[in-house]
Length: 487
Ligand SMILES: Nc1ncnc2c1ncn2[C@@H]1O[C@H](COP(=O)(O)OP(=O)(O)OP(=O)(O)O)[C@@H](O)[C@H]1O
Ligand SMILES: [Mg+2]
Image (cartoon, rainbow, N blue to C red; front, side, top):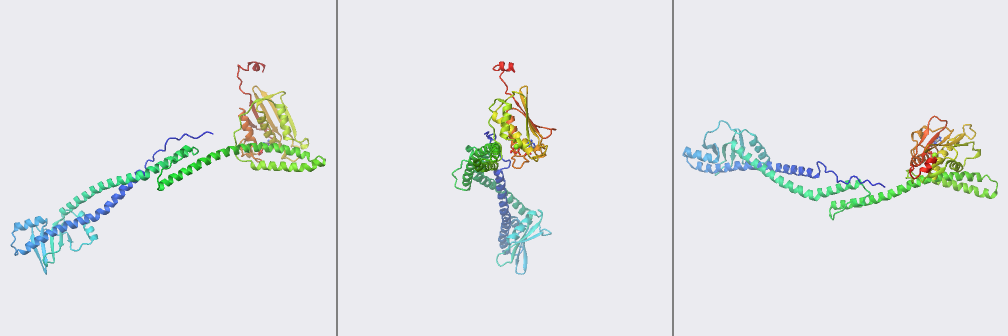
C-alpha cells in the first residue's frame, strides 16, 4: 500500500508563538508592578522633600525666635531663607503668628500643605497636584514647631519641588526599565527552556506524526521529566504507538474485508444457481430425493442469506487478468447453464455470436462479467408477471471488430430505473432491487477496464442493453509476425 510520506519537513513556526507572547506578557506585568510601586514612592519622595525643608525651617525658627525681634540682620535672614529654599518662615505660638524671616513675599498663596498629619491617600493626591500644578505656584507648608510653638510654616515655590519629583520619576523609570528588562529576560528564558521548548517539541512531533500515523519511527521519544510535560510526552507516545498499530491492523482488515465482500458477491450468485437446480430436484417423485431435497434447499437458502448478510462495503483490487484466447460461444453457454434459466420460465435465451470467435481475456473474469450482466437481465425480466408477453428474451451478441471483440447483453425488460442510471457502475449506489447489493455492474466494469476495454449502457433500446469491448493484447510484432499475417 502506498504510504503518504510527503510532509517530512518540520512544521512552520507560528508567527506569534508562545515565546513571543510570554515575552510581551512578562514585560507588561512587570511594568504594571513598577507603576504600582512608583505611585506611593513618588508621594513618599515629596513628603520627605518637604519635611527636609520643614526641618531646616524648624532649626531656623529656633535661631530667629531666640533673637530679639528685628535684631537679625537682613542679610542673615536672606541667607537662612535661601538655605531652606523658602521665601518666608513664620511660627505660631499661642495666639500669635510671627513672621520670622521674609524675602520678596508673594502676593498670593496657591496651595496649602499641612505636613503634621498626612494620610497616604492624601499624600498621593498632593503628589499628583505637585506634579501637575503650574511651575510658578506658591505653596505654604506647615510643620511641627519647636519649644511649645503651635506650628512652623514656610512659603516656597512649586518649581524646585516639581523639578526634584520629575528627576526622581525619571530615575525610577530608568530603573524600572532596567529591572523589567532583566526580569523579563530571566522569566522568559526560564519559561522558554522549561515549557516552551518542550511544548514545541511536542507540537512538532504531533504534526509530523499526523502526516503518516502508520509510521512507528515517528512516535514521540519521551524525555525522563517527572512533571506534567513528561507525563504528556509519555502519554502522547503511548497514544501514537496504539494508533499506529491500530491503523496497521485496520488496513489489513480493510483489505481482507474488501476481498471477502467481492468473493461473497459472486459466491452468492453461484449458490443461487445451485438453488435453482435443487429446486428442480425437489420436484422429482423419488421418495429419497423428497426426503433430502428440502434440507438441501434450506441449506442453500441459509448459505445465500449468510452471503447476503456478510456482504460488506468497499471494493478490493482484483488480481490482474490472466489472459488467453477464450471461445465466446462456449463461454456464453456456460453463462446460460450457470444462470439456470428454465425452459418454462418464459424467458428466451438468444445468442448471436460470430462463429468461432475468440476473446483475449481471463476466462473466469469474463464469465463473471457476462454472468453479472445476464443475471441482471434475467432479474429484470423476472420482475414481470410469468405470463406477461413482454417477459421476452435475453440476447447475447458477440462480434470482432479488428483487434476488439464487442459483446452485448440485452433484454426486453423494463430498462434501467433512473436511480440505477445515475449511479451506473458505482459500487453500492445503484441498486434498486430487493436484496441487491449494487455491486454487479461495478464489478463488471472493473473487470472490463482491467482488460483495457470499455463498458456502457446503450440508450434507446427496448429494455436494457449493455455493451462492452475487450481489446486483444498488444502484440510484439517481431515475435508474432506469422500469426499477424494469418489474421
Ligand atoms: N438489465 C437490466 N434491466 C433493468 N435494470 C437493471 C438491469 N441491469 C441493472 N439494472 C439496475 O441496476 C441496478 C444495479 O445493478 P447491479 O448489478 O450493479 O446491482 P444489483 O443487481 O442490484 O445487485 P447485485 O450486486 O446483486 O448484482 C439494479 O438494481 C437494477 O435496478
Ligand atoms: Mg446485479
